[in-house]
Image (cartoon, rainbow over all chains, first blue to last red; front, side):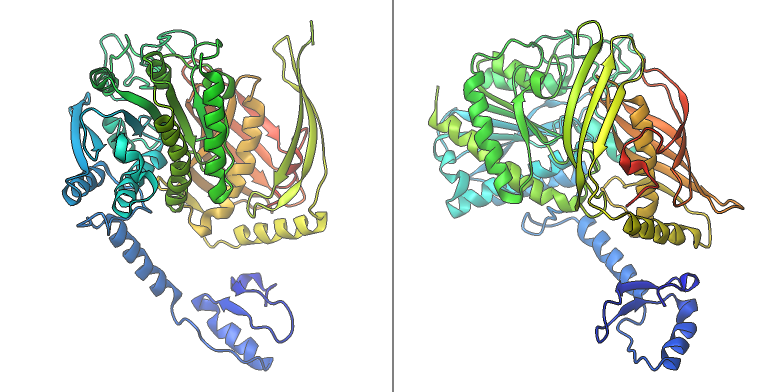
Length: 379
Length: 196
């Protein structure tokens, strides 16, 4: 039967040896032929599924329904799916509503297209406590990062409720989390171009739209490692902080004045990086950052065996000027790191949704190492 | 190497693209000459897979495509959410093999590529035994971060090297070129008849 190709039989359990069952999906038009063949050969058979297509149709409807249906609370929210900006913004509101004593939502500015830039603040009290900043989605096509940000938000709340994990960190520090750092780009990846990376700004004299928000910071701005061509994916923009998405974070960091660790999350490549990207001169804290990275990567890897490399931006990935963590580091935020999450190119930006939670889980272990180190090495 | 160029020594392991099984190790040297000609590559690999098994898999694969009732056409593989319809996996696999030949040709000492997405594919039914596909593939270029769109025409018969013709749209300042390339010629072992 296996060699009768025109029958288009699909063996779900292939023939192995005598006495072992064989499961076959039979296309409708081959049914008679297969039945006749089995009966003539004296092979007994039974029907396990009458209509496979019906099952598939049902599953399809169910999947569409469960991922698109607006959940009414963060317990039923589907963390294993990619969401639209409205769904993520709605998630944030639900999280705040469910945990008003822990979580608040801050609007730190507006994007070029006037979308609110929201940061979730996780705090158990105090005034202007030393803080950790995490951002995801600064490059809009890196969908696993925004999705992981959503998972991190829920995880922080859960840890606090169960008095485990980061609960101890929250005793003395605040956590700030910006999940959709580039909302205009994010919407664009849903409506028009899944591969869009930059912001959606149109500057005078620029032929093309958008600035690379990870080249727009005031650290080596405009140096080698960014492009002056507005059509380039690494266009640095007309001047530092020209992008409201960047300026709002700059203003926030400066006015807060007490951020001790800053982590900016990207995908893909599986790397943990620290300054500098704009110069080969090692950062003064290179040795310590390297040690923390080694520990963080080991923790990440312990969960599913995912392999990460680590090092300074310029030695590990490539020269990049005007990048986020070079600026934050030069502001005195010693523990400044950039992650490049899964994978290493097989799916790249189009990481299957089923990898969202494993990615978020393993990354969280690395983040905890960084947060704990910051807490235990206060400066 | 003074006056000559940069030479790299590489040792790496390979795995079956579909199953992730170990597929052998390779030792290679790559010389990028000072003058901008193509790199010189020497490579030797150990194969853990049996040639006969590869042939059988190629044939099964070929038969599946041959026995389609209509020419295959599709868009966005994987889709925005990373999904690949099981029925389209062979088509994706062929795109991976074919675009690796484009990437082989385009890569330099400072430019690397990954297949980001198959934007569209259309099968052309031929009177002879060859299977033929027209693809638009998106390549992700590093470190520029550009997405390069390439048109790729691929023909194949099991036992023969994959034939790939391509034309990539000019990037923002990137060079353009159309190339005809026999998939297995000087290429890495994985090129031979697309063994998945």
